[in-house]
Length: 381
Image (cartoon, rainbow, N blue to C red):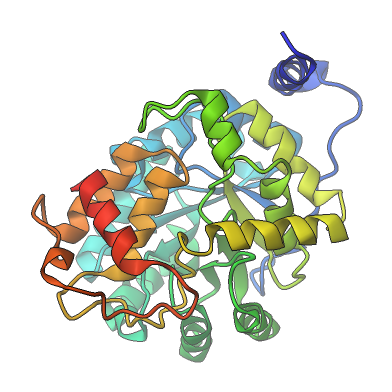
C-alpha cells in the first residue's frame, strides 16, 4: 500500500469516528448570512444528489456543516429518505432545503408534502421551484404555492433554482420581490458578469447558493471508469488534475456574495478535502491550475450561459442535453444521466443531429456542440 493510499484511508477513518473520539484538531467551519433570511449557513454546503452513505451525511453535520440540499427527484425519490434518516435528531441544528419540479400549484404542494414525509420533518427551511431557466418559468401558480406553504409553516423561505441564464434570472428574481433564496450555477468557467450579477442580487438581500461549482466534476472520478471499462490508473491519468477540484471550490467561495456552495460529497475523503476550502486561501498557483483546467475542458463543458437559446431548430434542448452528459462524463453517474436525458428526449430515438450536415449552434465558449450532442445520444439514448 503506497503512502497516498494509506493517508487517504487514515483521513477517512478519522472523519468516520464519532464526534467525541475525533481528533482535537477540528476543521474550521466558516458561516455566512443567507441573504436577509436571518439564517447563517456554512459556506460549504452538502449537496446530497450523489450521496448514498448516511454516515458521511451524519458526520458532515457533526463537524459543523449545516446546509443540506436534496430534491424529490434524486436517486429515484430515495435520496430524501436517506438524508432524513441520517440527520434524524439534528433537525434544530441544520438548514434543510429541497426542490420541486412541479409547475402547477397542486404539483408543488403535493411534492412538498411528499418531501416532508420522506425527510421526517414538519417543515423545510427552503423549498426551491427547481430548474426555472427562463423568467416565464417562474409562474404565478408556483409563487402562490410557495406563499401558501410559508403561511402554513411548512416552509420558512421561498426559493428558485436555475441552471442557465444566471444574470437574467437573478435580476428577474430580485424584481419579483417575493423570493428569499436563489440556487444558481456558478464556477470558474463562467464569464465575469455572472459573478457581478451574483453580487448585485446579494446587495438586494437575496440569499445566494451556488451549484455546479466543480464545472462538471471532470477531475474527480478516481475510482475506476465502469462506464468505459478503463482501469483506474488510466482514468486518473486522463482526467485527474491534482488539486483542481479544491481550487474550483475555493474560487467560488472567494466571492463574498456567495453565501454557501453546495458540493456533491460521496465519501469521507471528499468531505475531508472539501472542508479545507473554508480555511485555506485561494492561491496564485491554484489560479494557474484552473486556467489550465479550463483550456482542457473548454470544448467539453457547457458554461450554461444561455447564448444558444437553449433549443436548436431541430428541437434539441442543447444546454440540458449537455448537462445530462456531464452527469455521466463528469460525475460518473450514468443512471442519473440516462434518466434525465430520456426525460428530455421523450424516450430512446435517433439523434436529430444526424439530419444536419453541420451544427448551426455556435457556442461562444468553443464547446463542440454537435460532437457532444451526438455523444450524449450515443451514450444515453
